[in-house]
Image 1 (tube, rainbow, N blue to C red):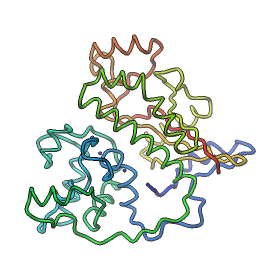
Image 2: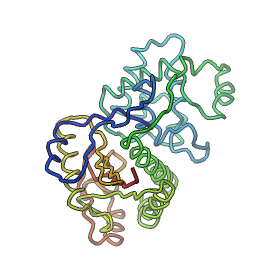
Image 3: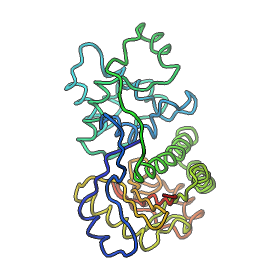
Image 4: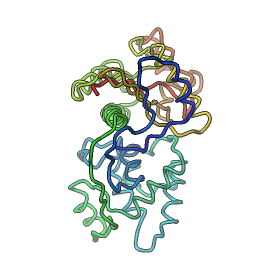
Length: 326
C-alpha cells in the first residue's frame, strides 16, 4: 500500500546546501520536456502504490492485490467520488480487518501495514482511480467476470500522458523504487510465508546482493544507508548524514518529501528517504515491546553492532543514495 512525481523541495534543503562548492545541487525538475497532461494522481499511484500493488506482478508472486481490484471492490455505479475518496483515505490512514472490503486479499496477504501518506496525496490518487481506467493484470478481467458476472469494474477516461525526457530526479526515483519493489516483494513474501525470523535471515543473506543486482541492471551505484545502521556496510557518510537530518526535519515539520539531486561533472548523486511503517517495527521497533525475544536474539547474533532499533512508525530510517551518469 507505486513513476514520475512533482519534485519541488522545501526551502530548508536549498539553504542547507548553498555552501557546497563546485557542485550543482538540483532541488526541482531540470528537464525542459515534461510528461504531457499526466494526472498528478497517476504519478503518485505509480510512485507510492505500485511497489506492492504493481499490475505487472504475476499472480503467484504478488504480495498485495492489484489496484484495479481495489477500484472494483470500492466503486460501483452508485458510488460517488466523494464516497469513494472518504473510504479510500480512511482505510489507508487506519488499515484494519473490520473495514477491509477485499476479504480474500486480507486472507491471502494479511491487512496492509500502516504507512504514512500525506492526505492530499491520497485524495489525488483516489481522484485518479475514480476518474480514469487504470492498468490491470491480464488475468483480472476473466477473474472478475467469473466472480461477479460483469466486466464493468474499471470505468473511466483513458490517460493521455505521453512519456518524454526524464529529469534526474525522475531517473533516480525510478531506480530507488524499482529496487524497493524487488526488496519489498521478497521481504513481504518471506514474512507472509515463513515469518519474521526467516525474513531476518533473508535480509542478512540476500538484501545486499539483490540491491547490487539492481545496480547492475540500472548501470548505477545503489545504496541504502543509515545514521543508525544494522549492517556496518550500510553506514552513512557525512554528506548522507546531513541529508538524513534534512529529511528528518522535513518530516517533523510536515513538509513535502521529495528527492534531492546533486550534480558534479558528469555524475548525478540522488537521495530519497526510507521511512518506517508498522511492518518495519517487527525488527526495528522497541526492543522491549515490539521486537519478539527470538527475533531480538537472532538480531544480536547476526548483527552484534546493530544500531537500527528503537524506531516508531513514520520515522526516517535512512536514505537511498544512488549515483549514476548524467
